[in-house]
Length: 394
Image (cartoon, helix red, strand yellow):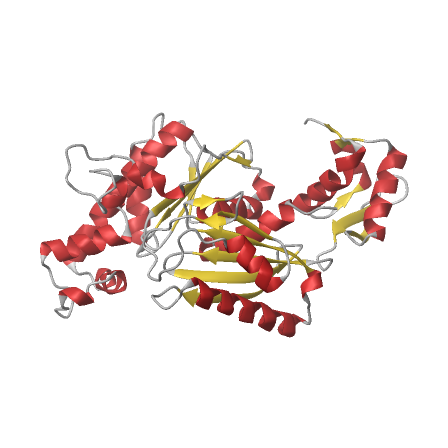
């Protein structure tokens, strides 16, 4: 264990963060983690309690002397919003400082959900949550937003999202607009990063340092964590993983600017819909081509339709191949997968993971752990709220 040397300017923040991650702790545990003298740690804890960031949580077990005082963060010092902006649906949750979800709302992202309409929905939901929990804007520490990329995180912009059913989302200053409407700070990151932040927080007792997150839905989105920290590249294009070429010489691609033989051309909602239409096969009940959409395909999969089952099986196979490619490059301890495609049927998940394992180098000596995650469909909203928690200024 490496003990941390603290400067006065950040001692409170680091001690608070440690308690937030670990729950209920004693002063002796903190002394084992940080290079502070006993009287300095006592003053720091007293200051955090006086400012209501911390609270005492009873007494611990005695080791021969006086039982130690236990400390935890004050869940009700303030509250945070986590907002997901995605292609199919968006959601928003209200959380306390222990990351307990107090309320959650979800909206369908159809052609009517322009930014103006969306802002109205968010504003109305915030006011509804305030009334429900007897809160006001001055109790809110901030809002985190996990959005479909590409983004300009520093400027708080949604740059040019693909496959949005409504217009008006290009070059949208989402943080500025939300701050003006709501009156508290707003942070932005892409949805895959937010989901991985949320899942990592939910699994913090496991102390995973190297994690991979993959979302397979309207597109393919990924996030990577190494050394317990998100890995950021030179540009923020979370969907670029879908341009991994997994079939050379192929004429398959989803849009004119995409790579031929790209992963997303075989593993995405649009790819599967296109394959059903290209085969000229009707879904159960002889649906017309215009009625062929992902939801109806999922129903046909559940009904055992052989043609649809074959298409999903092929997509699951390619999903596993691409996942193995990522694993062989990144070597994660934990792999979390989610999204509409993986949730369509248990067989999709099972096939994808089996193929990924079969094509992972050194398997089974190197055996990453696979999961659909703890937070699942709430991962982006919850992770966006954790973004605020990590940025608290004490």
